[in-house]
Length: 412
Length: 120
View 1 (cartoon, rainbow over the protein chains, first blue to last red):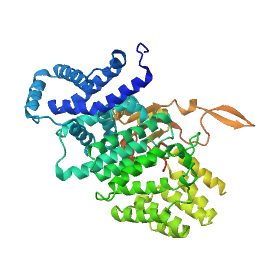
View 2: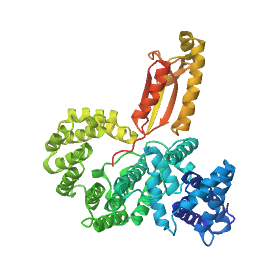
View 3: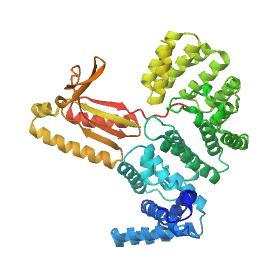
View 4: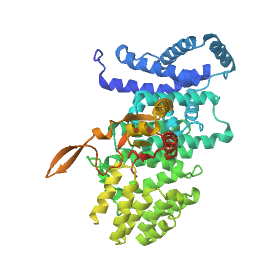
């Protein structure tokens, strides 16, 4: 509706404001009533009401308290319609137990991150709940981003909330002994959301890259809440430094452009600078973790003026540190690429050989695609072609399958 | 990650081989499965297909597409229905398929939808 004179720019700001306030309002409401699932529905309704009313009637002077008031009213209505008396008694009891004194909106948002990424939930549920409760996205938006029917996503979210309720998870920070592990889960969820944004095989691409943007926004939010956590900073830097190459990663028809063939003029300089700055602030001050190491590697790539000028010895050194820190076949695979760039393709292939008997790599197409590249560089074209073909059969990404099949065809 | 779970054969053969009682149980089973997959928030799509005898196959003959009656002659059993589920892991997709196989006692194919992010 164009009954207001504020234009689309204003509407975007309202949306941003609502997204920012969503976890704060939800946190405040849950802290008072103790009922995450009911509050989450109430806040979602308040957000929808605001999205309808504010563009027409103007943003209220105190948007947060507007949302809180509307959400509280919805919550009361809801509780009234449920088996009323018992619920009200429970609510009264939970209000008595609530923490006295003012808890900051920041703590509430942080608590919500931990709650939505509770280990008792499956990964798809953690992703969906985080996007809705912390990200303030509607169920329809989340469903469209994951290319599933809205009813399916609604059910997934409602099941996740039910599980949290049944598990009796209190609304509060995890105990100090669990905090580090729980933070790892939160970071993993944010990383998965980011990764989802890179799925371009089907559906509207715009929605998918929105997930990437949303993952960066949420990680930035978490970084502001926990500025001293090196791995949060590391993940944010990794996302920025990776996403900086987005425009160069694919051609107009969705074909993949490998890193060494990308037009570096298309890389987002501001994002690279920001990622490097975050990383520089963090490294050396806190214990180094694997996200920081991955970000450091991404930064070396991003700062190379051309593929030929990439500082591969440094990348290799970083992978060696990373592998000692968190050993695993995927890191070894990446190190093999660096080894090949520094010491030649045969040295890289020898590293790959150590992965052949690793069960975790049996269905991993990347082992085959890296092998194919290295065989090609070693001049073993027939073997390279076979490996490209095998990798093309194994991948679950459509653009990657096309890329690998094309590579094989060129060697035929 | 999404998977397509596919059943092959023909409904007609099912009734003849297994009987009407079994058919009733099968309908009830499919309703339960449908309800469970909806409630778990995993169901993306499910469809049953008309019998393979009603299929048309479009072939490329003498430089033009030509429709002919029936499914591929080479296909021993044609697709009769599918589910697309969005699940946490391949294990979960196989678990769903196993539940169907335990009931229909016929093989079911489970295939990943190409929805993975490419390497970057």
